Each structure stands twice: as C-alpha cells, then as structure tokens.
Length: 116
Image 1 (cartoon, helix red, strand yellow):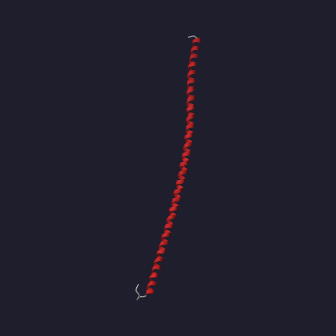
Image 2 (tube, helix red, strand yellow):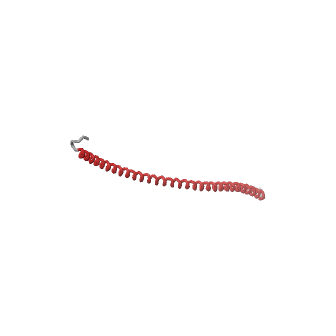
Image 3 (spheres, helix red, strand yellow):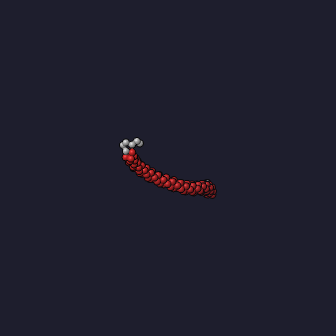
C-alpha cells in the first residue's frame, strides 16, 4: 500500500468520523432542546403546584379559624344556656314564693270560716 493510498484511506475514515460526529452533535442538540423543554415544563408544574399548595394552605387556615370561632360560639352559647337555666330556676322559685304568698293572702282574706 502506497503512501497516497494510506492518505486516501485516512481521509475517508476522517470523513466518516466527521459525519458520525455531526450526527452525534445533532442528537446532542436534540436532547439539549428536549431537556430545556422538560426544564421549562418542570418549572411550570412547580409554579402550579406551589400556587395550589398555597391555596390549600389558605383554605385550611380559614377552615381552622372557622372551627375555632365555632367552638368559641358553642362555648358562649353553652354559657348563655346555663345562665338562662339559672335565671329560669330563680324565676321559678320567685313564682313559687309569690304563689305561696297569694295563697296565704287569699286564705287570710277569706278566713277559716269563709267559702272559697
């Protein structure tokens, strides 16, 4: 094999390697584009997830505050009912005393011999 044939063979091999390198470069460029798109998609999804999480957190906070206010209102109502129960009890005692007083007055006015 002559030097010229070797040179041609080397030149052919270099051209093949150059073509393959161009193919690999094209594939790397395609993969880089896909990775960029994937990264953008991940950023969008992350942003959407953060927004949803924040809304859920806000909603949960509102619900917990409403529950707290409900428990406070129930406690207040329980105290009010207890107070009203005591007041009704006091009124009942006063009405009983008043009834006893009226009975004594009527009996005193009618006397022991008078008919009712």
